[in-house]
Length: 105
Image 1: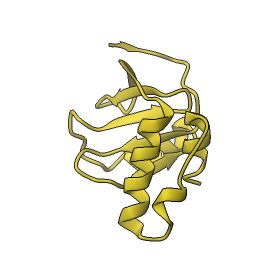
Image 2: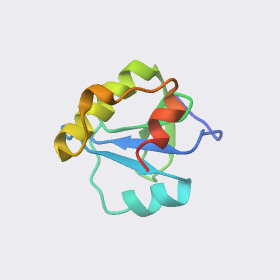
Image 3: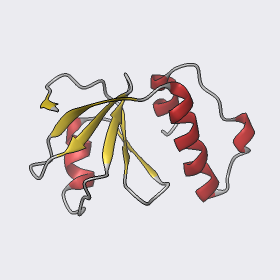
Image 4: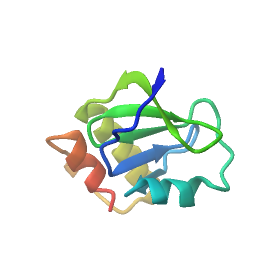
């Protein structure tokens, strides 16, 4: 793992044990959303290119070797929407990771 400066915003925050996804438009929003959260080692951020990041104690993102593909994002978004019970899950489909993340707006 290494710290990286180039992150493809927007991103989503996935907390371990929770199907809710948190949309993050910028580093400023990451700082705002995460300033009072307690993180586990299994929480992560996914950027619009599919790269996965861990969150350091200083609220910086540390890139991992994990890269998400669009089918994995569809699965996460379906679980997120199922929790809210607002959409027909079978209609959730995207062509790219970036499109999937933008759908959470």
